[in-house]
Length: 307
Image (spheres, one colour):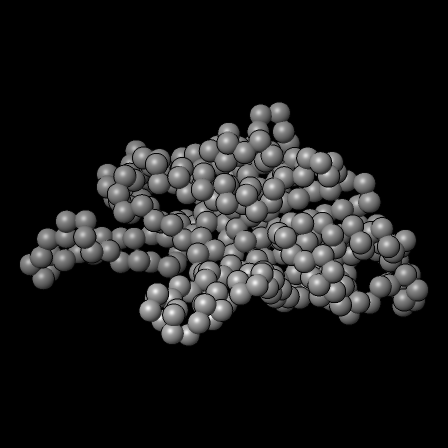
């Protein structure tokens, strides 16, 4: 049976690059995990094995590290844009580049004033501890004309210990869940947001500021929403971002419900007044949705594990 080649891409995945910027005695860290995927005129390498149009994946790895030195890493988005533009414009057979980046944050370790004097001022501004709140992500796609930037985060665990209810739902003969009028609401946020920036360098967003503001609005909405369902909270989180950040047209969340069930303490003669819970890791409810600016079309894939 005749066959034809479909969608394909290649590149070097998970290039771990750490860039130290030394500003006198004060150091700054950018810690990235960069994956490069290239596509274009690659039929022959699949059909006959000819590598005439193939830029080695080892070269893409070397480019990542060289660009960290040449351009620095102002932000994950800006670094990805430099890489995508380079691969598409420098290699004629390459028509499209997709750069995926995870960023791992670090924060400075503060030392006591007395110890700072003992070890010297130059010693206190280059010690860091890995921040564990979330992993920042971005995906930059460039086809020689159009850009698409989708940034996000994952593994951000949040909890409201009250101001959450769940009742009035459909019940059938298999329903055993009791209605809750004061429950813990917890989730591990995976979110993506698509920028409406296309190619105007003058109108390029401030990527660092945008990320911090998106995260701020997301967390404020989670904290300030009196929740009757995780779906309601999800929508408020996305709507808060869209309404406050003009550079973003689409937000998609995947929120697993990290269930906390009240433990029955009556066998021990104890009353559990919403104090002791069993944290169940599985199975879990999984709530997913996309929030769009009015008039915009969804582009972020429903299966966000592919980003």
